[in-house]
Image (tube, rainbow, N blue to C red; front, side, top):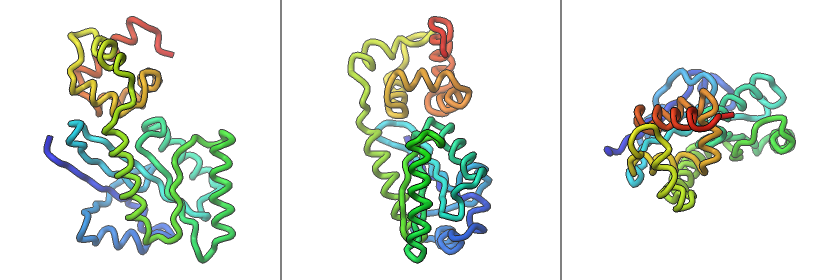
Length: 226
């Protein structure tokens, strides 16, 4: 698989305070190419190949500050970000402005509390103290996410003896098994994904379409997906 990387910024991103300055810097960066796009419910998307696994993964982020907390629109954006992959390959980057530390910290803690209490879905939150720290925060998250995905946590017995046969066709290929175990943490999580339209779309973007169809048909016909 040829190396591939695409980094997208929401069209509205550079119109939002306090991100205006860093948006301009990213778009004019000579180190990493950024392109503006209509991302609707998130601010940043990064798609890249993982050559060692032979798969492509997409990561999504929304950027918040104390100006966004307590806003129904923000709550909806967080919920939509979570639904893209049940919280996987996604994060919130929150600006705890060093010039407005008290109010910003209170807003940051309020967001964490809402997630702990279940008012909002749980997602990783990365705090930064200045917009210029955004590129470093993104790189750190992406490097960590890619590293964790190179070591699948599924039990050997499941990947070797069970998962290859979860299809109405012939057995799933080793490449498909690798892609599945890299993109979802467990069989239970995979079945949860298959039970939702969003999860089914993600599946068809992760493995070959014919394998995705055969896998979904197997669980639909052999078992009742909740």
